[in-house]
Length: 188
Length: 300
Image (cartoon, rainbow over all chains, first blue to last red):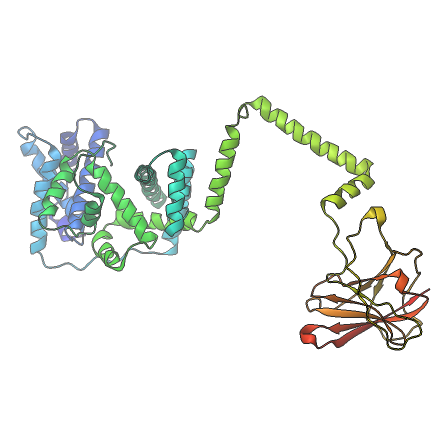
């Protein structure tokens, strides 16, 4: 367990209070929480942190512990509050002795196999049009890729940037599906 | 995780990419971070750029500088590592499949076919299927009932090739001359059943001049008749020259093959008469004409 995580273990009621502060609707609160966490991780990674996920979690823990004090008086977008707390966490991180970079991810055959299996499952869940789009989008590389994408865009009557956006949206769904699939596979 | 709303951020795609690679300047970084938390839809753009970058890495499209930044600054979370694995899996799943473009062409053709007037209606599909079956049934019936007619049609569609691969050289040899003059004739025309001049065919194996066991063929009657001598050759890949000689060595007919079977010698019957003959097969590579086999046959 990292130094950050040993400081404090978030209590369930604190976490529930945080979610409720983000949004009274639990499902929406969950989505907002995920978005905030993803942004924190992206910013911390961009700032050169070697363990952005841990620092993001520490930020969330701190906010969760403060919610009881601020929830009645806080005005404005809750998300920006996280940004302020994250700056403090990052500042403290920079004062710590440099931590070694976490080990590289394992690229063992089993992990690859699971990813491929999940990819196949998630491809099957796509609509026929989405699947066709992904197949074509990733079919070629280099010059052939550009030509193929121009052809697809012309066929659909859209520009290349719109095609890219559509393909990436499907790819995003695919990624979410693969992530969920891998989690459920790991539980088995 | 990603909003679907349109963004209103002023940052370009290139700036987003530089953010992901940790390359923003000290003045750009705070503003970018602020907008990431406050501007609707901006998070979605960053997320798309994140996926695009992972794809570029998996598809080996990053330059050396970006590659180093990617591994040091981008690939620091388990989610992103998983993203790269998925990109790699996608690459191996689709990019190596070069037939995807062809598949796309087929799908376009099928789509256009579907949009032909009325073709999307089931009744037309059934009618088209019945028509195909009727054509197939009629063809089968024709072949069974009229095999001769079917053969003629086949011959017209796929004309038979002339038997020799190269121009055969016919030799008119006066019977009482010891130094025959070599003459040539044009290559035979493709054979048609209606006027097939080929009336005799015999398979010849390399042998010694033991004339008691050689194959015998009957000389056909008619000026344009051909006798086919089918030579069995072990190495079928080199060019050969075959010379038909009388048993006492007078050249009657010759043919060259640039290479490959069938090694048929179609000799005009008019050049043959009752008696024994030999065929000398020589290797025609580099003009060596090294004799590789001899064949013997008898005509009566």
